[in-house]
Amino acid sequence: MKSIVTDLYSAYYAPYIKESYREDEAIFKSRFQRTWFALLVFALVALPPFMGGYHTFFMTQVLIAVIGAHGLNILLGYTGQISLGHAAFLGVGGYTYSYLAMVLHWPFWLAIPASGLTAAGLGLFIGIPSLRIKGIYLGVATIAFQFIADYTYFHWTTFSGGPQGRAVEAPAFFGYAMTSPLSFYYICLFMAVVLLWGAKNLMRSKYGRCLMAVRDNDISAEALGVPVFKYKILAFVISSFYAGVAGALLVIHLRNVYPAFFHLNVSIEYLAIIIVGGMGTVMGTIFGALFIVLVPEILSNLISSLAQWAHNPDITVLMAPMRLIIHGFLIILFILIEPAGLAGIWRRISSYWKIWPLPYI
Image (cartoon, rainbow, N blue to C red; front, side):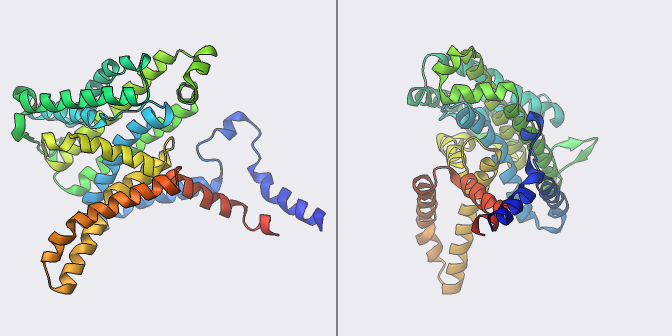
């Protein structure tokens, strides 16, 4: 009986044996993973034309949140540098895009990367204190930058448009104005795939391993020859670039830019995305963005349905605070029960089915 079980295990696991480091570090380690990824991409490309504008709008919102949150994930989840002013970098990208596109009349395909680079330049400056401070002290320093950014958005009217903000027109591509939610959805999908693919490959490189070494123990990393200051700055620059691109896409999506879009509570929301989703993973960023963006909308729809069923519109007003309470309770529940986030739950489920039913023979 023992030999039969051994033969079953050997036959099952033989295809998963990796013979080289390149195979072990591959993004998709099996044909099964490659197949499901191809099906996912096909669904993201083929299904939106058959969906309404309402659902396409929120899918676009999720894609933008994924890009911005993964920038914070690179900084916090992979490098261990806390930032509570991430929304300020989104604002830098958003306002830079509005100025370049609406005032200087740059094409969107130049204004978007330029917005990301502008945010990255500020990230280079803001990251300098990370050499001397870390932890909650670094978080307080980034909050200070958030307050400075908020003041700038309100008072530098030439650049930002002041408290009233600035309207942002739909981008045009070879004379075609992409006013429909579907056309802009595909732009965001393309940007999300490119940036997430780049981040995934970055973490498989020596630079990514150095970032994670700094996260785990910066003193030991420096003793092993890792230039800690260089990689802390690199993390801030990359994180800020992702945030700047996300901010530019957000103002295009909402068709205007306004200081309230980039307030401190937005920074907390992005921090919640990577905590709920799971720090240090691309999958965690995606799961967290889906949770933070869609769950409040689902709760709002449930409350609206309850008000219609009870024929009492006042229920919507009375239950509005309950939506925020439930949302906050779910976040706390994940932190207490599942510190690894939704990505940790996904890993356990996938691991269970990967070896089922062999452990139970």
